[in-house]
Amino acid sequence: KNEVEQSPQNLTAQEGEFITINCSYSVGISALHWLQQHPGGGIVSLFMLSSGKKKHGRLIATINIQEKHSSLHITASHPRDSAVYICAVLIQGAQKLVFGQGTRLTINP
Amino acid sequence: NAGVTQTPKFRVLKTGQSMTLLCAQDMNHEYMYWYRQDPGMGLRLIHYSVGEGTTAKGEVPDGYNVSRLKKQNFLLGLESAAPSQTSVYFCASSPDGPYTGELFFGEGSRLTVL
Image 1 (spheres, one colour):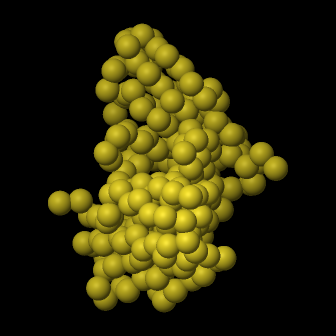
Image 2 (cartoon, rainbow over the protein chains, first blue to last red; image 1 turned 30 degrees about the vertical axis):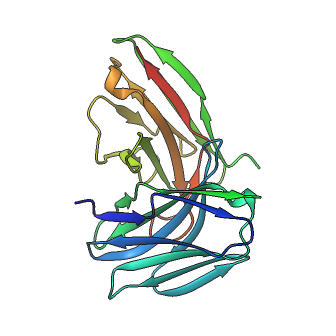
């Protein structure tokens, strides 16, 4: 079983829909990252969380440490949000990031 | 601002050939990482460095060597390429470590070993 599981693996939605991508992990962590990988391949850091919630523009990330779960929400989705979204967790006590397999999001106009 | 720059972007090698991937960052970051990305798998750490002159093994170090002679550069070498090393390679950097904030990634280097 992977230490980090993302769901869904693929998600297709219409422009304007509210999007939720989930990340569950099975180990103790110090922090969790959400990353965006563009169709061209480049990877951009979106958030780093250790508790609670963070918001940047239309993106919201939440984490529940007790339940070992994080969600990435996109409000008023747009075709330019189409990308692969990757969750990565920092294993507690180790300088090691473990990455999920990613969620491929496609927003149709 | 350049950020993290990887060269080359694409390379095709024959089995047994050697090559070096260069990662350069202009943000004065202490930590640098080399990852590989394969279909259906998450990014996996090959080697990392916590400062000039230091390197350490990651999750999948076999078949690779690294050097960090200058703070801004992190080199990944393949001494004798194998088809299993066909992958997309990403370099990343961070100011103080993966737990302190943002990671900065290069655009990736696609390597094919025939």
